[in-house]
Structure formats: structure tokens, C-alpha cells
Amino acid sequence: MSSSFGTIFAVTVFGESHGKGIGVVVDGCPAGLKIKTSDVQMELDRRRPGFTVHTSARREEDKVRILSGIFKGHTTGAPICMFVPNKDVDSSFYEEIKETLRPSHSDYTAYLKYRGFADMRGGGRFSGRLTVALVMAGAIAKKILNTKGVKIAAHITRIGDVVAKPASVEKILDCSCSSQVVCADSSVVEKMLKALEKAKREGDSLGGTVECIVVNPPLALGEPFFDTIEGDLAKALFAIPAVKGVEFGAGFSCASMRGSKNNDPFIIKDGKIVTETNNCGGILGGITDGMPIIFRIAVKPTPSISLPQKTVNMKTMKEETIRIRGRHDPCIVPRVLPVVEAVTAIVLADHLLRQTAFSKTLEE
Image (tube, rainbow, N blue to C red):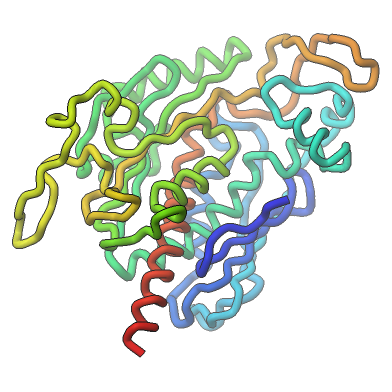
């Protein structure tokens, strides 16, 4: 299994959905960075399940334990190990269906890859529960980026058929993180909530889209040809379970635009070179140009639904009908926001440290 990501700011994830807990080791964080346990806990609380009607009934405290790498409120330069125990676990249903493939889950491909030895309880290694590790690592990455004045914010732009209007950078940054549905277009929030409630009543689920912006990104981050910023961001974003699409700037709409409309004219503003528009999403040639990085992800509907679905029993090799029981989100989009911000911070922190290390080498 591939469990690590990053070159200098390297993140290694461990644990399973119904195992002892979820953990992460962050290597390469510079010494002397101020970190409090509450900095990490605040981010974990944003993705925690079980506290609204729109999320899983699984009630995990998700209290972080920092095991190493931080001493007297500062990073030491040693690997930072953080761990969150799994406490509210019910694996009974997964034992019942261990031979039955759940539609649109990783059951079949995991069986092919790991020959039946993978932990299937709660999705095991393929569960959204693993995003706890990403959020913990992202909290450290955000603290690094904060020293450079970088701000990262994600909000919901679509749930099901309910679509938000395009919002300004300022409105996205001002979104309330305490809202059940964080969306810069407040006029559609109630419609989104009603859509979620309807899907839950009907035993179904919804997907959606999330937009993320990075304000004041460091200039010239990215390592073409293969380690471009959008390339590494896309790889990290696709590690989030249920993400099925990523687009930057104008994205797929570029295909229907003329160059005269898609091109971003250069201008001078406050003595700096900027672009008049931002169809490129803050990235040119795989390198940040200083404009806000803007991208959107598509999140598929939660595959665990209570409606009957066609499937196959691997033991009997017969077709069956399955009804999935358990505690599941009717829509995971609201809980994806802190995860998207976290993986974005991880990628940017890694590239920032790569660039800084290279600059110091030149100076020496």
C-alpha cells in the first residue's frame, strides 16, 4: 500500500476505519514552529461526524494525541506523530456481508489487490475515516503557511441539483465555518438543507461540488515537468475518498472559450504584476503566479444507501440484492471542506519548503 506523500514535508498515514485508531507521521517540519494541541483539534472538530442530521450517527470524539515532535509548544524538527483513537465502532454488519460486494465501494478491487486480507470493516483503509490523518497533517501545514500570510478556504458550490451562484474571494473567505452547510451564496443554503433531508428520508444520498481558494500563495511554487502545483494538488485531492473530478480556474469551460476570452491580460496593480482575470486559477505552466489559486472538486454521492441494490456474492458466485445497514452520511460534501483545505495546505507547504531549501543551497 502507498501510505506516504510529499518530498520534504512528508506525510505518512496509518490506521483503519474500525481499527484501534487513525494516525499520521509528519516529517520535515522545521523546528521552532508554534503548535498547540488546540490548533489541530480545531480542524478535527470541523470534520467530526454525528452532530447534525446530515451526517453519520457514528459519534467519535476525535481527540488528538500528539505523541512526538512537539515540545513546550514548539516543533522540535523531529517527526510529528499524531493519533486519534476509534471509540464508537460497530463492525457487526460488515461481518454479515463480507462475501457480498457493496456497489460503488472498493470491496471488489480491494479483494483483487490484497487477496482478501484487507480489513473490510467500515471500508478499512478505503474509508473516509482516514481523512482524520489528512486533517491533522493539514493543521501543521496551515501553521507553516500562516507564517507567509497564506489563507485557504473551501465552500460548497453544489449539493445535488442545488447550485450556488459564483462568489467573490472576499465572500468565500467570510463564510461561516459554524454553518451546517458552508456556502458563500447564502440564498441557496436552505434549499441545500432541504435536499439533504429529502435524500435521507428516501434512503438515498447526494453528491456535490466544493470550491477552494488560496489567497496570497507564495510566488513561483511548482516543479515542472512532473511535480507541477496542479499536478500535486490533483493527486492529493484524489486521495480523498469520493472525489471524482478536479478542475482549476475556468476548468472544463475553457473548452468552449476562445483564446481572447480565456487569456488573462497582465496589468500593474499597487506596483505589482497581476492578471486582470484569473481563468488560469493562479497557475501558469504548473507554477503559481501570485493570483489566488482556485479549483473545484466533484464529490460523488455516498455509496452506502439503504435502498435495495443489485450485487454479487463472491462465495456463491450468484447475483443477490443487498440493503446496506449501518451509520452513513447521506452526503459527505459538508465534511469534505476541512479535508480539502488540509491536503491543499500539505501540498503548498511541501512545495514552499522545497523552494526554500533550494534557495538556501544557492545562498550557501
